[in-house]
Amino acid sequence: MPNASSGFTTDPDDEHYHDLQQMEAELRQLRTPENNPYRLLPLPLPSPITDPDDGTRLPATYANFLVLNGSVLMPTYGQPEADVLACDTIQQAFPTHQIVGIDCRPLIRQHGSLHCCTMQFPRGVMAHPND
Image 1 (tube, rainbow, N blue to C red):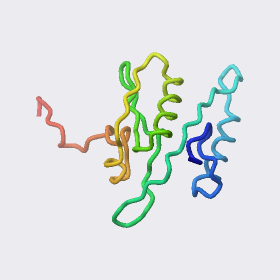
Image 2 (image 1 turned 90 degrees about the horizontal axis):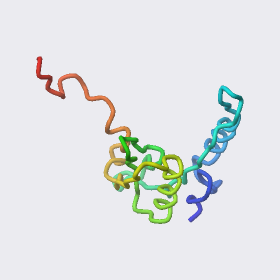
Image 3 (image 1 turned 60 degrees about the vertical axis):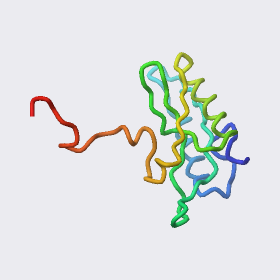
């Protein structure tokens, strides 16, 4: 499985490979206020998942996790090796949190994932008691 490596992706034929390599290089240049480098924990990139209707690549990423009180909800994609590697990596970032995997294959068909679906609600969707 070429994508579940210690880095984002090791497959130079993946359409995201070069952009992710550039992003990693940029992140390695960032420094804390004390001029120390940040600790980077590379997440694997799931193997491509395509829309069954039109064949377009769907936005499957483990970076679309959601941090809650004491837990991290982490997207999974039915790719056991990559899912476990991503879970282990996220656990390193949040050692005191419980990591909970959520199958996000239905969500990515809507071109979002966990974090995306918890964002803003349009005005009028939520009823306010004082309205």
